[in-house]
Image (cartoon, rainbow, N blue to C red; front, top):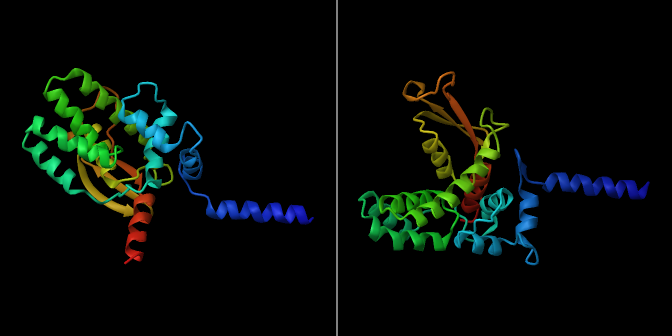
Length: 227
């Protein structure tokens, strides 16, 4: 009886402290990426990521994207001076000058989908096929994991993002125009203009998508509590 009671208490504690959001088990991801003896140790994965390792698997990209929240460089709302400068030069289409700044931003945190996509565009514009393909691989590898995390049809099955800006990468990739945005529980509800959507025959327009933003909201709450 005593053993059963202990087991029940342990199970209860595990459930209380477990962190699973939709299809993403953050407890498991933390365990896998914080083990320095494992091949999935986060620094090892990052080393492979920045070297454009083509053997990275879907699971590796999942650990890279969601495991980023357990690193000291994770900041879902902040933007460094280097990133601001990079975006300014990028928007001026001064692509060659933007490259070293983009690389500097990615040194700070390689899991930056906004900058990864713009680096892909830069090398596309410069007709550098090798680097274009490299950055496309990294960008779409990460973006795919957001798609895999949920279908976005309800808050319960929302796509799970670690940065609000990642929502807009998905929206841009789907070529959608936001009509209205609202916070519903832990989710950003994005509603789209269906009139502007180019549809294949038999394809239905996307009226709305839910993105789970619990992780960035919790991070923001912690920052406020620290003041």
